[in-house]
Amino acid sequence: MHGELTRRGLLQGATAAIGALGTGTVIGGTLTGEPVAAAPSAGGAPLSGAPVIADRAFVANEATGTVSVINTGTHEIISTVGLGSDPAVAGTPQPNGPLNAEADHHKPFYDGHVAPHGLWLTPDAAVLLVSCRISGTVVAVDTVTQRILGYTPVGREPHLATVHPDGSHAWVAIRGEDYVEVLRLDRDDLHNPSLKSTRRMASVALVDTAEGPSMVAFDRTGTTAFVAMGKEPTVQKFCVATRSLLLEGSVPAPFTPFGMVTPDGSALYLVHKARGTVSVLSTQTLEPLVPEITVGPRANHVEFLGSHAYVSVGGPAPDSTSPDPQGKVVVIQVTGHRKVGEVTGPQFTGEPHAMWAVSDNELYLGHERGNKVSIVNVSTPTRPRVVGTVTGSPADLSFLRQPIDIVAATGPHTLRAL
Image (cartoon, rainbow, N blue to C red):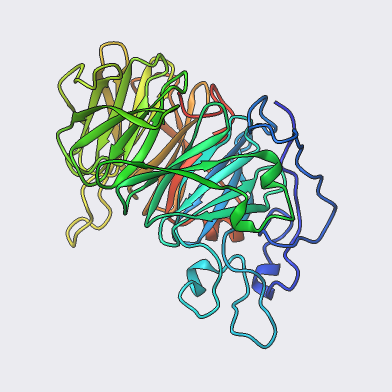
């Protein structure tokens, strides 16, 4: 892996408060400071090949409309990418962006994005796709320059855009609709200034699904796609080449926000949030391989590392008697698909949600309500332990609010296991 995110600078015309962000913060738009090299072009090739960055993690901050960029070697936020509006236009009501999504998204002339949620990297880690639930947009961010390359309006409440293993397209789970939207990914289009920003990731197909698709997971070869549903107790398997339905299976509950294929490709893990369980299905038949595994209330993400799967669990909903209940991390041994450990305690308050491996023995864990990212050591796989939290400047940390998803170009795999 080569290259680093070394961009420093501030948006021209930023307010004094934004100007105080310092040299460790990128806020999108037109940047001042030292020149930024253009991202490499490959003559229209898909976004595949060797990763162009290393030791970087990206965090979607749903509350502030930003993405935090973390150096995974130092566990420090090095920049913040704003997805808010363009700079203010004199004589108009347009609010000054792009770090203004939280304050200004309801105002006239606001032209930014709202509620960044799901994240995914292209195979070469050159482009980060950010699905913004409330604005109904998928945004492409150049991971080297951290500039917005373009965006595509899609259906209501896009939850996550999963990039195909060959980097040529992404399947967007549109949770407010009954279809998945397929976007073409082309390096030249994304970097073509003659194309409108909304034309750089063309929508090429709508794939009919059950109600409320929430996540797409491809198999290792990229020949089949599995779609988890948010509003029906159903999972579907599609042929990628023809985009046709191959198989449909039943699951115990309708609210299934997250699904992942095991590294060996044999099993599909589905997280049922409201039920607090994980189903493990055969990728061939969509039949259960084991009885559903109880993990706890408000289960969220699953991440594979080594021979284990780690499930983040938010814990009970806060109430007047327990305003900040403890969540946990549950450990499942992939061989045999059995629960072999779980950890909880004060370090797991704040609703654990996002999770991603950043080294052979470390995970990042985003606390949705706690507004922090914990560093979890899994040297002893069945006994994860929090060893610290991600740091950063006060300005950068102020944008780390409701960290809902994490991806990384580092560790044992650049992408989620496919």
